[in-house]
Every structure is written in structure tokens, then in C-alpha cells.
Length: 550
Ligand code: ISL
Ligand code: CA
Image 1 (tube, rainbow, N blue to C red):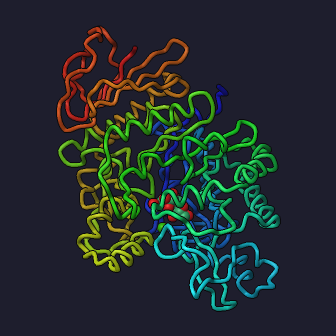
Image 2: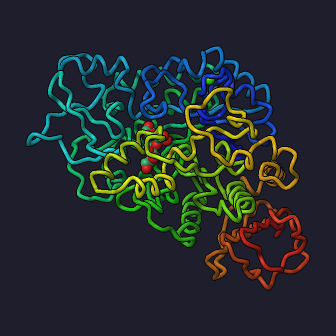
Image 3: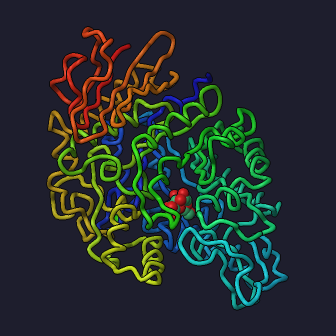
């Protein structure tokens, strides 16, 4: 097992727009992040992944880039970025930047030139096709609702956009485009950036014969038509050998459509990515209609996803462990109980994050147990996926209240409310009205209050990060799940060079009988989210997490 830094690292994800606003314009920015570097270091994390900070019209939260070489002015300047990088490195922390290469903004110079005429030199940097029977070239749906094709008046042709119409897909079949991508990557790596998160990398090679999808199951359409195209391995290998290897950079590919059956193809030690984000658990509560068609999920299904991916990466490849990010509901609201057992279930989920096998990615605010925000009206949403979702829901005859129920559970606005630093007017995030409302529970859930509280989620996270560092078994150990016949109990063991650990999680509101009679009472309790847990054997309380030797 190579001891690559990223296999031991804990990564902290920062969504800069909502992290900290340094200049009182209501929007988070790089100087806001710089002002919190000591806090980030105090968590015991090793790296920061920052969401896109490049020039963007902000149609999709910065995932629509109009200039890859310029910092979005509302976030700050290039010298702010250089200072952030320096500040992280001075504290022994690494920086992972987020590159969006499946598509650009429609305001990027490449697309402005490409759409001008069919003879434009940049025409084939994007996918242009003639319509069919007066409609789009095929029936592909966009991730953000509606067709994945937009008719462009200038030439009457359609262009492909798997996401919003302001995010035209880049045509990776084009040599010159791939060269431009390598150049922009090198620009950031030359600055000493330590890692790259590659947005929707699984889709840079797609079915360019563009057949109709034969399924209404969107995740199936992604897997078989948008992702895992015939040249995906080739394109990844080309970047690896021509750029990444010269900088020893860690690469984490975001992979909708990547499955346990094909993941290893993209993680080859020589030609592949360092690791991937898979979505096995993240889509399990999405019905055939996608995000706003939530369906119940089961604990056995949840546990199976972890067991399946641990099996996949048992000998080769490497994965990430995440329970939330800027694209999903807050983890404690989605997987825990953010009402009666907010403290215990937040700590239990953090325990799962930091003791499972794979690089943990913790999303800003989850270290203090921030919860879902409840949009009071769709008009409060700032997310194109929610706004388009409402447009489609209306066509299905849904009332706003019905749609809001789904959006307040699964929508992306939930995770994008300002980080709650203290209980002042705007939670210490800004001196001005923030771009998104602050969650009303800021007085009960904020960093300042938890800094001094012994049993706080924040201090529990710090202890957990320390424990993980003390035991390489949590980074490199194998991970075997044990079925104890109780669905609510998630029990797994980690073992590495004789260091054995067992993790017991009770993911329910009820107490559960301790599952292992054979467990001798002397087992050393390393940590629990219940301060009075002294010995093995007594019942597991609601949402109790216990880490033991052995
Ligand atoms: O939100 C989702 C739809 O259910 C996810 O599938 C997500 O859109 C997908 O995983 C890709 O996400 C990434 O690319 C998007 C951007 O909106 C997301 O924020 C980013 O994480 C387009 O760039
Ligand atoms: Ca600002």
C-alpha cells in the first residue's frame, strides 16, 4: 500500500460563498477563508478542498467557468489566492482546487467564438448537432431538468449541455481543446496546488453518436450514455502522463455513473486518478424522477454501499467517504436525527466519516452539526437545480408546498446557508445581509458556543481526528462489516499490522442490546459519543457510537 499523503488525510470542504465574508458585501470570499486558517488547522484536518473560485456568471454556483485563469472578483484576487495557499502550506495544510472540465460557461471566449458560425475555428470545442423532427437531436434530459440540448439562433443548430443551458459541454474529442485544458491545469499546479477535484470527470467521454436513451431512470442514463464513454481511460491517462505526474498532484474524480464494476478502470496506479467520489449512498433516496422525487432509504442499503465499495477497493484503488457536500442536504438532517438526537447523531455520523476506509471529506459546518435550512418559498432558493425543479414540478401539477417538502429535504440550498460562527445577527459570517438567509437555529448551533463546550460536536470532531491520526488502521486498515442481525446496528472492524479496532454505531432512536455477548468486558473503549460509556456490554443508547480496541 503506498503511503500517499491523501490516504491518511482528512479533507475539509469549503464552499467559499458561504464560509466567511471579510468585506461586508454578504458574500463569502478568500480573505474570509484566510481569516479562519487557525480555526481550520485546529480541527486537525490535513487539506482543504475549495469549490470553484474562477470567473463565472454564477449560473450554477461557479460551476460555469468563463475564464479558468482569473479569480471571481467577488471572491477576491489572485494575490488573495496566493496568500491563502501560502497560509495553508505554512500550517502544514494542503489545497485541493476544483476544476470543471466537462463544460464551460456559455460566456467563455471559446463558446462565444464557437457559436458565431459553423465555420468558426472553435466550433468543435463544443457539441453542435442538427435538430430532429423539429426538436432536439435526441431525448437526453439535463441534470437540471428539460432537454440537454439548446437551439442556438445564430446557426439554428443545437448544442449539448448536460447541466444548465449556460454550461455547454466541452468536446474532449478535439485535440486542441484537450491541449488548452492541460495548459490551464498546469497554470494552477505551477502555483503549488496539491490536489485537483475533477468535476463530473466521468462524463468527459460520452456517447458521441448521441443515441436516444432507452430508459427513464436518470441514473441509468448517466451511467450508460453520459459517463464511462469509450475514451474516458485514454483522456485520464493523457492528463496523468502529460501533466499530473510532473507535479505529484492528488486527483479526486467526481464520478456520477462510476460503479463498483467499472471504478478500478479509472484508478489504475500508473494511468488513473488517485481516487473517486462515488454516489452509491447519495442517490439511494432519489426516485426515478431524481432529486425532487425522494423515496425512503433503508439502513441495510446504506450499510451495503459501504461494504460493497470496501470490497471493490480491498486490494486496489481508493475511495472517499463523504455524507454531505454542497450538492446535498445536511448530513445530520438526512441520515441522523436533527431534532431529539441532534448532538449524538451528528457525532455518530462524524465517527462513521472518520473511521470508515477511504479519505474522509467533511463539509463545512458539519463539524458543528449544522442542519437543513427550510426554504419558506421557492423564491428564497438560489440554486438553479431547485428553481428548474420547481418549473418542472409545476408542469406535473405539484403545489409549492409539496415541492418545498422535497426541496427542503434534498435540495442543494440546504448546505449553502452561511456557516454559523456565533449567534450575532448574521452568525458572524458577515456584517451585511448574506446572499442566503442564516439558519434560524444559529443561536443553538455555532462555533463560538461549541469551542468552549466540553461535550460539543466540534470538540468531539477534534478528538476523533486526533484518534484517527494515532491509529494508521483507520487509514490503511482493511474494513470488514459484521452483520449482527439488527438493522440499526452498523458494526465494522479495522485491522492493520496487528492494530485492531471495532466501531459500533446505533443508527436509531431506540436503545439496542449490545450485539456481541462474546465481547469481554475488558475491551478498551477508545471513544464514545456518550461521555458515560465506560465498558462494553451495556445497551447501546440512541445514536450511540463506540470505538473499541479489538
Ligand atoms: O446534484 C446532483 C444531481 O442529482 C449531482 O448528481 C451533481 O449534479 C453531479 O454529481 C455533478 O455535480 C457537480 O457538477 C455540477 C454542479 O452543479 C455540482 O455542484 C458539482 O458538484 C455541474 O458542474
Ligand atoms: Ca465578501
